[in-house]
Structures are given as C-alpha cells and as structure tokens.
Length: 84
Image (cartoon, rainbow, N blue to C red; front, side, top):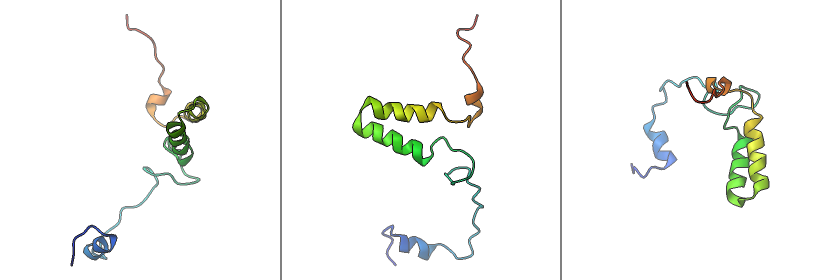
C-alpha cells in the first residue's frame, strides 16, 4: 500500500468502526443554523475586495461585517477610552 496522501489511502487506514464526533455546526457554516462571522457571503465579499482592490468592493465587505449580529462577547463590549 502506497502512502502518497491520496484520499483512497486515508480511507484504507481509517477503521470503519471509528467513533465520529457529533457535528453541531459550531465551527462551520450551516444554512439555517447559528450565525457565523465567517459565513460564505462574508468570505466571498472579502475575497472579491482583496482581488479587485476597489473601494466599492471593500465597502460591501465592511457593510456585511458591521451589520452582522453579535457573535462573541467582545461584540457586546464598547470602548471607554483611556483609563484614568
């Protein structure tokens, strides 16, 4: 058996009775599930802005980022300025 990293090789080495973790969608996008900051729409807008370098594409990306719902505790915090 060759170990060239092909998917067939990986399948051969993976036992059929290996327990699988439940997929609750916490770390990947699932349509209709909880919101992810790196959802396909945002990622595509970022890629387009990076490829084109235009302000319009960047503004579209920024609009998606700044209009998203809070997804982490840090999204609920506000900056109070310098400490006294």
